Length: 531
Image (cartoon, rainbow, N blue to C red):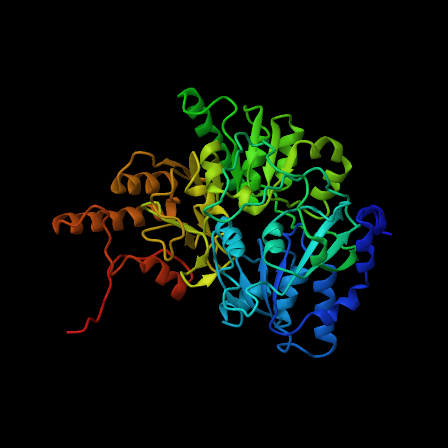
């Protein structure tokens, strides 16, 4: 019996009780090279019992590198599963997003083949069969899905996230359920709409963040369920660092901007549905809103972090829609459980294909707020690749919202430290080394230094605004010197719409790689060109 009830209470479809087995009895179902689908979205609602048992089996039998799988998961999951699998060389391919030191290291060393994708597109492309088109069956081999329970007719009640559960059911004939009794049932919190492929795709009729358009559970053919195990593992949700001085300043700039937009009549008094990305800065911005002047707020996002509970408790947030309830293990989730009756009626959990759907974001007029690695002076943003080559996590859902929102905002510290220089990395650069979000996507850039409103500005005007409002004082003169050089040279040659000097545009980043800081002495370069 788990902390929150028994397996018999959770599995209400009685004939499925014949599928119940011990975790170790499922291990023979897994063979090297299989395509596996997992539930989960951020460290919430992901299978734990079977992945941990498989990792133990590989480690105990020295099978590292001999049992490798292709993983297809809605987003990142707990480090005790996928990151441990990476450490044991159990992953061949991984789509579309990940988090963890070992898995990122293996990807960057070429030992894991990762594909990055906008999350809303990943969900639909999985259902279209794009990721299994080269397999004999055209389907995933096994889906492992964590659930809170099973209804009388075999439908699945997801746990703390929905992710790509509907798509896994569509693309897999062999499903193993992990019924989690270590966490409370989340029954009633979900709104499930299963989308069909074109030309039969439905209109998604969400007109408010709290619109309910579907079912409270995921329909599933019970004959696909080959095993059921009980899981007594809790989600390992990540704790976020407290708001620092810079994050608080960013939140202050954004609140002032929202107040001005309300006064100008471009936003209603309760703003528009908020989308906030993952991370400490995003959490700090939400924390700032919890002390701000706006009430009757709504949220339409992909991840609810601890800060959203503050926003509910402040009386400012009326309801929230998300794909995942990604709360910290020791603070956020216990807090949610303690006041579950208060929170659960205000939160809707949806499939990834709905929570991140551009159609809905455009209709609702979502205010999108996300954090990049770097932004260049024209408004291109890099969210994924440090130095243009080393992947951090993936693009996630930022692009889903940044191309479809009412206001598209990127917030970042103006600088980050290196080992030798506390302001050694400028997050504002002449040109991003990798571009995930183009200049056409962003409306607002904000750092602790200030806010640049890019709406209606030409590229050269955007450069002035970003450098002068958002760059750190250690870099503002350096960046302005580069821009003035580039503008003078390119205009003289009649190619000055978006000036760049390609022989020196990356000098700041090259200096970082060589000397541990982006602070350069001058912009002179020496190039040996083929004669």
